[in-house]
Image (cartoon, rainbow, N blue to C red; front, side, top):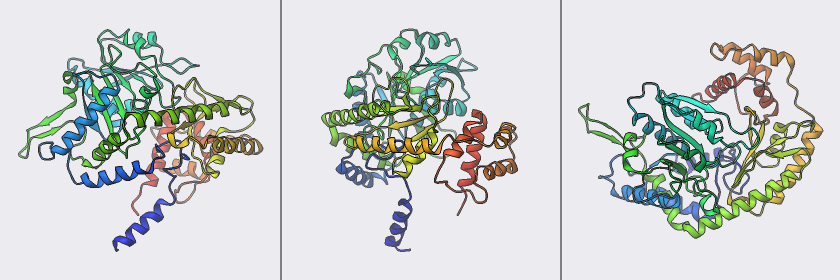
Length: 466
């Protein structure tokens, strides 16, 4: 194929994706609304994409850019002259490295644990799974969804290598009481997951939550979120080099070069790093202040509009640019149908299943690009609620619910999974359904472990060679 034909096919494939600009996809993407930022990021990415971050002595430009980004992040998040960091591929890698460093700093602990509020990002559970660490999950306040400092401290024991809190939590957009938790930990490593809030909360004057809180030992912040950089770039900061050292890996036990890694990856394209470096330098502090204010103003206006709609309720007290809302008991319509109706009107809002005191809800990640379109969003949301009310509640066939209840995630067979797909109207070749309300309602009847297994099976069915 010619280069022109390949690019034509790629454009045709991309036409079926969710839009990444215009503020209509309220999860997964972060849009500054500034076209030159995207162009700059793409140009910088192209200039450095062939460089390899594996060896900073071979590509000193990447070393310089990484140190610049770490320094900028450290200054923003209350760092000192002792603060060090690493640029990673995203928030999950940053969180995993924080857990790895904490575990390896305590080799004498035979069964290490990490203490998390139940609202902590699932990346920490992934880290625990990969690194053989046990999660001690602490319930949050059932109304505010914030971590409870005394409960967090009570969960700490001699096996605890790390305590985690969120600034803010992804699910509800609420800020955990970081200073109060830190004040009760007495020397235990304390990581603040500011992946989604670290580049916006300081510009809004919200906190403290970073290294300006005594006892915080590491902070993660994603630049491909509210720094509006191309994916995927995150920064993991440690209060000093001694805390970072266990994160590093070296091996001379083979006949090749001595492998030295600062992150989970070895070979790393310089493209994302250069793109982030360029965007951060271009936007600058004043620019980020304006973007943060625009996103926050949009979130406040959208929240007020949601609260004015009959039958909807915002969860907790979201402080920055994230929020989640649910349906009031007895409202007579289904939340997942609202999501489908919003999709029909060109908006993507993210369904979240019920978990402990958090009911099923729809999550919104509001960005600067949403400023100015709040009225349009709220008009379409009101119309979606009317349509959902007209459609009535989604009712799961009792026989299907009984079939799901009998499934064991540990012994689920391909035949059982195929039967469930057929019951959900997805028989035959697995594809991507256009409406999800009935499927989500069915998944909502499944316990968490079963839902995990079912969705993994579905994922496996999607990813097959063509």
